[in-house]
Image 1: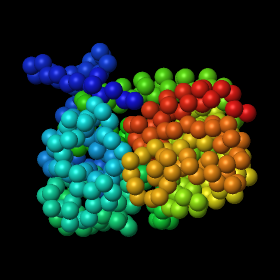
Image 2: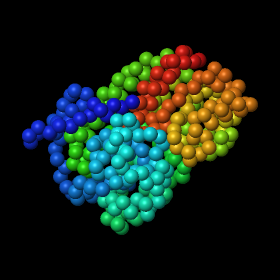
Image 3: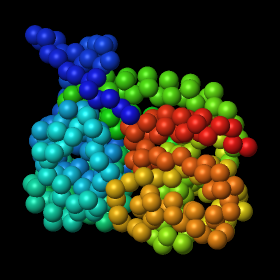
Image 4: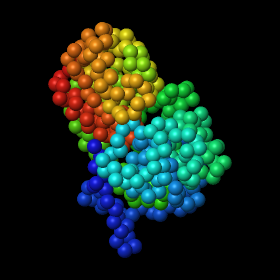
Length: 344
């Protein structure tokens, strides 16, 4: 888990340093406004650092908190689970507009000058919260995480179709852009450097996995417990983890979280089932205990080799989506598979 307690900032006279894990980084150049950024098919022109931010999406909120911007956040929404422990105190002071999707009215009632979203389906051409034009009409800048739109088609409905394998570079791009928008590029550079160090260590550890080519399925949730399951497609954050470990995803579609029948999953015979743990209760199978009960009692699924031998790895749901926590997920998955022995 990312330890933000290591991230501290100090200012010495006219020189600023971001201190991460004992290493210090010289201050980056100040942002020159107006700042223009290409963002998910739109162009943002930022005239000054935003002062009132609504964050829609747990990943985006935790990124803003990691950048030390708690005092700028006036509302949050879309939560899968508890905030990272390092940010509990700051987050407790911020108004939560909704656990899931907030209304457009609830967002604009906070009088933000900047709205940042984790998912394009919340703010975008078909935004469930609002379209960019709606915010623009109110002089509110709207920003969407690049991890949810670069080489990803969100016009197909659902969670979209990812055309290229996700990499952490997209998360670093978001940190870099947000830091520039708020004129805190030194903090952004320091955070990125810390995450890259952890990513390199996690990938190096994962490359030594004893589970090469083992077939795996990631189960996020299901609209109906006994119905089709939302599983990880071939290019999302779980695919990034699986590539690092050298294991094989039994799902081959480019859909981010395709619905797969349990008949097809049984036919693919995964030797390990990775299960999402979350506090969200949007769907009946969001709860971990519901998923485990289904696996153990369904007359067909319970006969899977992975189920009979309880080859389960439980991961935090946020680590399964593109975010800083994806590195946590890679570390936890490598440890989890190692603990299972050598599934063949």
